[in-house]
Amino acid sequence: RNLPGDRQKALDIMLPLVNSDEQVASDIYCLVGRIYKDMFLDSHFIDIDSRDQGIR
Figure 1 (tube, rainbow, N blue to C red):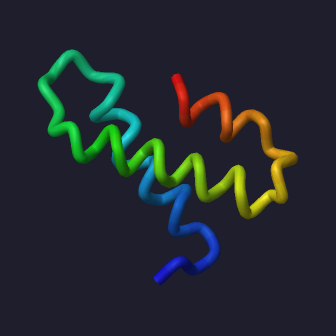
Figure 2 (cartoon, rainbow, N blue to C red; figure 1 turned 135 degrees about the vertical axis):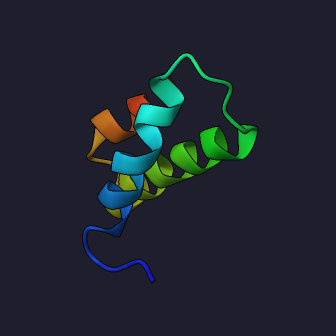
């Protein structure tokens, strides 16, 4: 889809999973990193917060 707000909606669902003490599938970590990477690239390399979150 890639509609406005889709990435943030996905992060709203996945970040609590990643930050929990429960075991999470490695695919979730990959998706979160990919979302942050896409946000950084779409900002034309200006959104350094997304870049930093993606490697955290």
